[in-house]
Image (cartoon, rainbow, N blue to C red):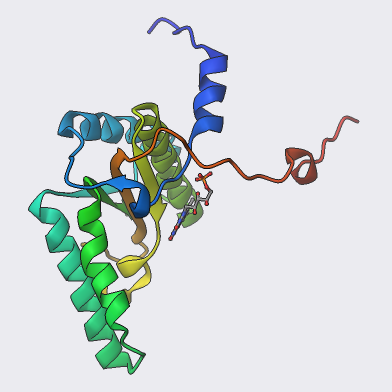
Length: 202
Ligand SMILES: Cc1cc2nc3c(=O)[nH]c(=O)nc-3n(C[C@H](O)[C@H](O)[C@H](O)COP(=O)(O)O)c2cc1C
């Protein structure tokens, strides 16, 4: 294919202007068009991937599916508290139940290993994270509120089977997307890059 012309200023603008926004900033009951979600997923699919294993898998909850997911994680929280004797908090239960429905779409982020690929698991996790960055940038380019959350079932062993995970496969969290209530974004916070880089010139 012919080499496309990019606009580096625009790339820098979207990278530095991307922000996470959370359910408190979500416009409720005003869904994002599925066509935009499909664009976000298509862009996820263009992440780099060693040996083209393309380890990302997605489950998209929307409409009544958001309630299905909220009920699922709330009931699993309750079941785990009973089974493990950990404290059960009614507020936490309600939060698990209700938060997904504040979003327009919630996308479960899965990493699926390719048997016999020989690719170290670190590389497959990294490839999924790159796919998620593509999702963040595309959602933000559309002015949407979004964030990557690693709460709820992310680290619950009991949830693995429900998400079809085997062996070293992983649930890597959930990508929440909604229209934003505000035109402003939080200020970015980073310590200087100079503190994190060393150069070798000779
Ligand atoms: C792997 C990963 C996991 C994250 N998990 C959570 C989470 O569980 N809860 C949360 O509020 N934010 C989570 N975030 C979003 C961060 O809070 C957010 O990226 C950070 O505050 C920096 O803000 P920014 O994204 O606007 O630059 C996660 C981000 C990454 C990359």
